[in-house]
Amino acid sequence: MNEQQIVEMFMSYIQNERNYSENTRLAYHDDILDFQTFLNQQHILNYQDVDYLSIRLYLTELKRENYSRSSISRKISSLRSFYNFMLREEIVENNPFTSVSHAKNHLRLPKFFYNEEMEALFQVVYEDDEALTVRDRAILELLYGTGIRVSESADIRVGDIEQTYQAILIRGKGNKERYVPFGSFLEDAMATYFTKSRHMLMAKYQKNHDFLLINHYGDPLTPRGIRYILTKIIEKAALTRKIHPHMLRHTFATDLLNNGADMRTVQELLGHASLSSTQIYTHVTKEHLKATYAKHHPRA
Figure: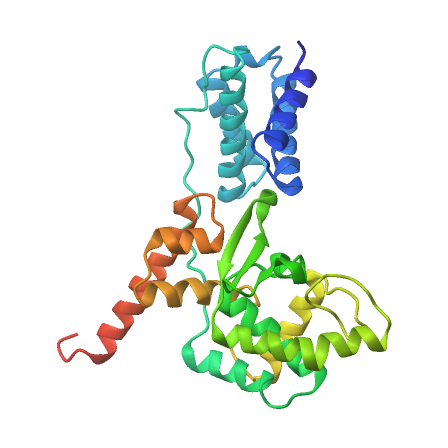
């Protein structure tokens, strides 16, 4: 079995057994091919001959080429997974990447909207009952009320909404499905959206599809279109600091934790495969507590 066949086996594995997204599979493939190019340059004939010293030489080469810390860490992670697969398939006898680590960049805390900023955003979408304003209201209530990704919201069909149980079926990364509950604010916003916006626009332009969110012509909204709408809402609210629509998801998680939700529940709601992805929000809540203490305690 040659190197190309081994890589093809691994790509099939992460697609069919691990159900990784297309972008993730491409990243893995590129990382492995980059490493293969390095091995060829070093006249290392097969994966079994790779040892700790050759890996250190590879990392030195990556640094010389000015790869960022996060990029190098991702390559190490990709190659460690690749070698674990080969170890499982008995192609190699050990995984030389097991003992290799690389420091990532300093932790960047997710940014979120403060309460007064969220109030300013909602004021924009509740100022009238025009068709597009009602649509924008539904989008804002949906993203803040469920914490789903913009890309996930664009994929929602009308049939995915379970009115009886007040939950929405969400298709997340890697085509993994989860149900996310919603509250009365989103329920009311959706009811108004259907009667005063979606039905009217689709009838006007004679459109017939099952996607929940639509543009002003009645066609399904793309993730890019939703981000554009959110950006316009943010601009209209006259928020001054640099902000991004994905901050709604960060705000959802931060508000839950600040109000007593447990980490596992937040992980499930966000659709994180690993708890470590969710734990970054504990740093945000700790910073929030520290700032509140410093502001209000007389001995701070």
